[in-house]
Image (tube, rainbow, N blue to C red; front, side, top):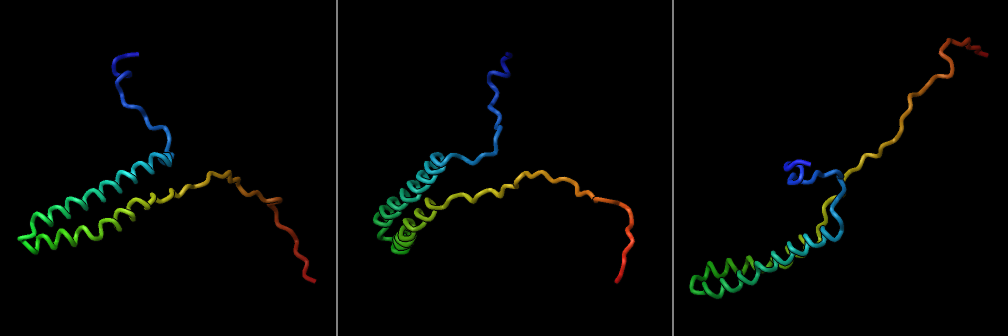
Length: 104
């Protein structure tokens, strides 16, 4: 085994979706980050109360953040459209010759 083989990145050998635990952890991080933005907005609104329009803008920004955080946390990635691999055989004829038709 040479030096290049030992330090190369692993090769992804599957197209499987991330595990449920990994997906849940990522959604929790997004929720915490979005909810964590609310407190600085409220604190900055208190700091900038002399500039009423800036304080109001920060307050208005902080109001929908919990709703947005819940929507993001509950949003799962869409399922992949998987194409089922099925065996398809070529249709064969029983006989390839012409037959006499009797109208009666």
